[in-house]
Image (tube, rainbow, N blue to C red):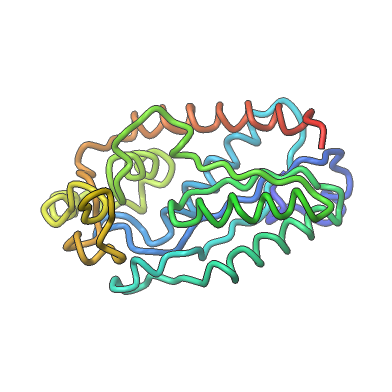
Length: 237
């Protein structure tokens, strides 16, 4: 059940302790992909996984702003501090648990959220009346070309939200893209911000994306999420 479109009386009838909380970011993804890419992809994976799961699960509204100061040079990017983000996720999980949905998978679509999510989910599970684990969809698929606004994200968007991808800007995105994330020397990333190594914020070649690949990625990510739901549903806390 999607809480955004349900009534409270609909929600009252759901018999489950499972919930999915999509989290993403509002940040630049090159000239071709929307600022909301990370939240859109996280929500898409969460909703698809919930549809495919053999049981009831709540899908909470997405957290649209995450930890994204590294993209601050590109207009439209929004960000909050790690403390604010962790507190928001923790309190949202607490409100889900208040209604009995106390086994929560945080479905993540943004790399900058990964570390703080692991930390806050551990804190929730150790100290609160809930159990929470983070699930980052692009870590659950078999691919090594994630990039940023690159082939993976653009493929998923071209399948799930094709109207939001500017097909006529893919060449522009590729021309100003970096080959990889950061500026690495002796195992150290010297760059703190995306603008230091990518002219237009893109990393990777989005021309190598496609809707067919996006469909396969969504199948793979949602299948992994269903497997995780099965385990979280039965795991002793």
